[in-house]
Length: 616
Image 1 (cartoon, rainbow, N blue to C red):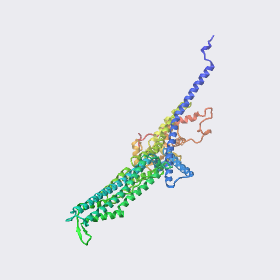
Image 2 (cartoon, one colour; image 1 turned 45 degrees about the vertical axis):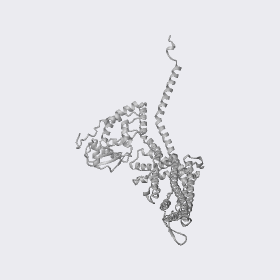
Image 3 (cartoon, rainbow, N blue to C red; image 1 turned 45 degrees about the horizontal axis):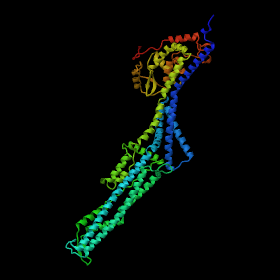
Image 4 (cartoon, rainbow, N blue to C red; image 1 turned 90 degrees about the horizontal axis):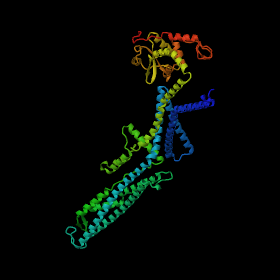
């Protein structure tokens, strides 16, 4: 009696088989996902990078238009977004085609188109990134530099006026004391006697005039000090990013515009002081007093009263008034919001034009230093500072950060597109692996073994004349050579004309063809007359791949048979060559066809030629 426990039950076997099949199916799905994963990653990267580039370009273009026309309607926003999306799709299409099999002249056009479109994308992208990374800091630096420049000039003018006031106060006190001395002691002028007289009245008049001018200087000093304090308050608000300086759009352009107007008014008031009629009158009066030594005595006569100390002090006052500084006009760069795109484009174009002229413009910080030195330096003269102030700044060291970000985004899109040929090869490897593991692998292997020897001899003849030139494959068919191999090549390529595989070519010249053939050891390297053919893009690699995989392209296969004088004339049903029989196995050739194939494999191939045309 047989124990039933020795044989597993049928249900258990079925469950085990189903479990194994489920595991195998899951493993296959997992393998397929792993195979498809690089493609998904590439698509995801292109979508993400293109979206970033599109948004940066769209925002930059929108802000640039807004800086010129103001607010933009929704319809125009959609139109701009569509235009930028078309530009990005065109860049992706060009990159996809650029790394596909195309002719050299078309590839050149694609390269020019890609460079042009990328420059547009990088330019607007740079404006967008510069707006968020640098515009606010640049506006703060510009305001700080402008206010500091004006404050420095105001401080110099204020100090000079204060010194003039102090000097005049001193002269006033000295004149009053000399008036008292003249009344009590005399001798304040040569040989003067004490008492009331014209000399004492002269000293009183000097003290009164000096006090009046000192009060005038003090009034102007207070006005300058008031302007100085107001600029200090504005500078503090700008540096601290006071919330009250921001408008409804989130920028400080309105406040900075108002600050520019206040700076202009302050500069105008200060510069007007130098040409103030009252100040000029006071200066002329003091200069004239410094040069006088003889005065009328009120009775028709004159008296001499030279005063060296007074003359020296008054001459210094006149020179100080003449040397009051003149403030050069300066502006705060209101480059926030839409104006940031304009400023970014201005700096970028200025730098590019300077690079073309081999003379890079100064950076904003360098230009501010040059302007400060030009104003402070006496060597520049009256026209030195305006010439420096008229210069436009180029890109600064901090400006290259947003520029590199804009370039990096488009460069990453290029890198992902460059990876396309590798993905193709990975797909080919997977395809070959699947084909090797398929049920037809054994039958195809036998078929390949049967035809490999003849195919190898045919490609050996082709490799004698095929060479690479400037990225394309060419075939130099010898016309002056004799022998079976030369006739075979002539017949082969003649039959290939018009089949979409080769085209006749004029270049390269014969001497370069012979050099190419000699480098690869071709027996036809010494021939003088060739007919040149250029393989169409991907045709030669397709033929080599077919040879490796053991099958030929139909046109090439027919051409090779025709070149050997054994073309088939007619086909059976289903498109098979004559000799295939109708049977249950449609892939099995009949005996006559197999015999002809054996006869074909036994045909003598073209003999190898030596370098001088003889048999090798």
